[in-house]
Length: 292
Image (cartoon, rainbow, N blue to C red; front, side, top):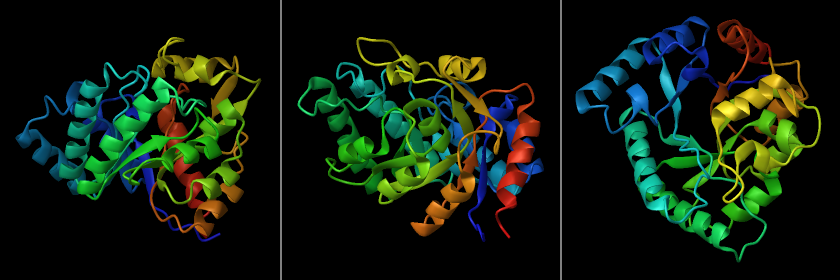
């Protein structure tokens, strides 16, 4: 297989801060990076114009580029109409930052898409995504919804109701395997018209799990990334494992990405484990083994 996609690394997976994480990403052989940009040193509200220029220069000086920023605002995604105005505004500022840093993609979770298309939660999510999609398209950019909370076909049906493709997809095969039991290969084919960014992660589903227990749902529980990582590490319902040790069929998955003509990043995310740097280094080698 001649896999030519660039390899990205989630900087936050190293757990050492942005600047040190960028150095490590370069050291393990990545071409680009994804960075959380919601709070702390990457919060758009506190990252001054000067600091943005310095950060972009630093990244470029390492020979890296940004594959995407992560703008996941947690909670219930965009299910709650009362808090959506603030979340939409924050999301727009994160996209502004991404564009300033040379990227056109912000990945996020929007909350579980409900089955009832006539309900208030569906309407809330639809209105928020439409507004964000129009904003993204005005900048030739994308908000990319991460796969996992619902089957690919259901996510596509939601995306098809929006007025633009400014809201598209960040494809994570492990989330599908671990939570919904969906087939990533078929998922790629189903979501091919929306796929703009991918994560490379592996996992196992140990027993069926209610997605609401993982991602939260308005009136049921709030999404908490620490909780998701804890669940993945504990093996209660699913387990995130190093690449090649789980149930993602990467040969078929990469072949499916090639089949649909996806030429974007393959970005490594490692949310658990005692030695993430070593796992990420091995993951880079794992992907590189498909390049020849």
